[in-house]
Figure 1 (cartoon, rainbow, N blue to C red):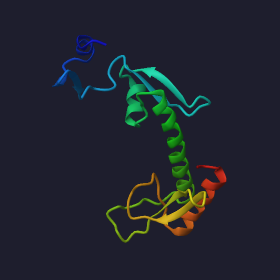
Figure 2: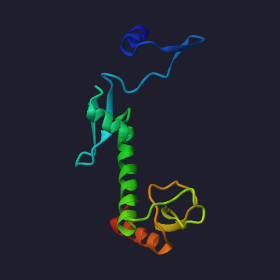
Figure 3: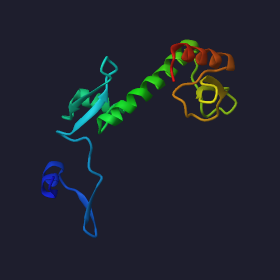
Figure 4: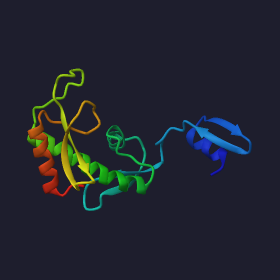
Length: 153
């Protein structure tokens, strides 16, 4: 695509000229007419659509479920399924737990997949790096058991 076509499609652009190359900075994405991929969670886990800024587009964007390529959406589908399984298991086991990250004395437990033991296992946590947490080691063990039973990797 020619630079003039990009400017027409995207509006004003900030450009850096370095030697013979032109770098486009901060191009809004997605914008009207851009193709994007998203995870739908049905038999075909991904689909594509063209951005027009409607409620569906905005909803997918608000949930960070828009991807520039089919390959990125396919990878995201696997990661989203795994994250959703962790969230579901935590909410089934400890539905009322609400981690307070300002309270360093509150016990918080999460799970991780051990590639050494080839199974989910529990760990105490002081940082928020997992999608969901539970309040005790026993509950985290139950979450790990569910994930192992469900075959989540």
